[in-house]
Length: 258
DNA sequence: ATGGTCGTTGGACGA
Image 1 (tube, rainbow, N blue to C red):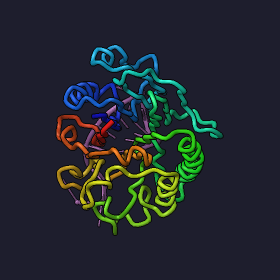
Image 2: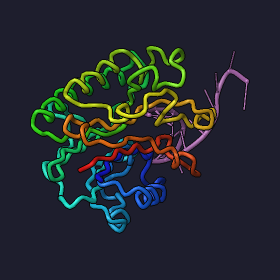
Image 3: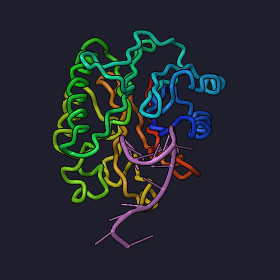
Image 4: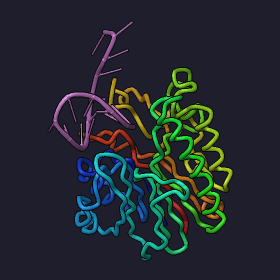
């Protein structure tokens, strides 16, 4: 069994104990982290290596920051930290090849609110991402794209679609961009299994969002056709969200017969 | 309850 996962930890410094516990319990082979919020010199490499994981990271001060944890037998090759054609100091992308698997970890911009400068940046970023993913899917058979996409793909991924209608994370251009990603030959692994609503990966810290299940499903594991055929489960693990001082995101985890 | 909470920071800003 091969396991791929993703988790927006919202500060790796604060969440390191949760991460180490979760690694111990779940033993993913590849895990993409987002919002590490650490410069590379402050990355807790030793603690993660002591847990049995090789790690690569692309960080910055205060914001963003991504990492990939690996316990496959392969060293990462062809490491990419930027979208082609986008000059951007924000550290949101980390891709690497492990054996025959191309693993792409993303922290898609939030977009703040529809019509804002940050929203325009998000749409431009997504356009460049689609070009990159199209090219990656042409080059590799086994592709896994994980991350905090900051897009709820459909109304069933939203606790109250009327409240969120046309809002950031749910707007039509964002959802169309998500569909374009799937159009590259990818599948939303979660929807290969569960079809219901009320299943979320993020809940606002405010207003007791988690307790009331006022969430969105914005963290995803996309898989290419070759991996779709051997994917045996894809779940959202809400357990860490119940702990003291949790990330506002839950980890997502997919399993493959490989 | 016309706001609510975190994290990074050392006053706001981003989410």
